[in-house]
Amino acid sequence: MTRSKQIGNHKSDKKKNISKLWKTKRRVKDIDQIHEDLQPANAHRLLNQEIDYGLPGNAQHYCIHCARYFVDLKTLREHFKTKVHKRRLKQLKDEPYTQEEAERAAGMGSYKAPKQIAVQTQEVAME
Image 1 (spheres, helix red, strand yellow):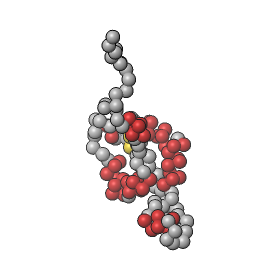
Image 2: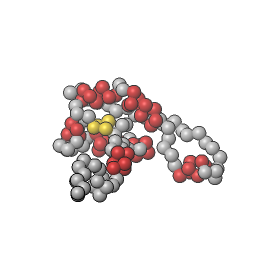
Image 3: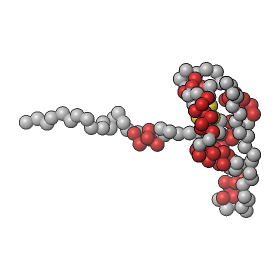
Image 4: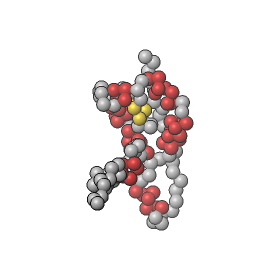
């Protein structure tokens, strides 16, 4: 007798990096990248994006602090009241890491506490 064909199993040639896909599915920007986006020139560019039909809300409702797009203005305003957004604001208050701080952590200098930075909140116009 011959062997029957196997159906429904994972094929190794098609899904080699399935674990990598799962790990990077909901990847968001790091804190230091968001600090760069908070600079006035970059913030103005991100808040006034052109219409992009591939993004939620056509890229018109964007939270700079969380690097997320929202469907409409109502959901963006509700997001500002959530724990996730408030937690991100608290993380952004610390100064981003530098090469000097990494060297101090490796034992090449003395410890200095990170400085606190004032984070500007995002203003949303009433429509």
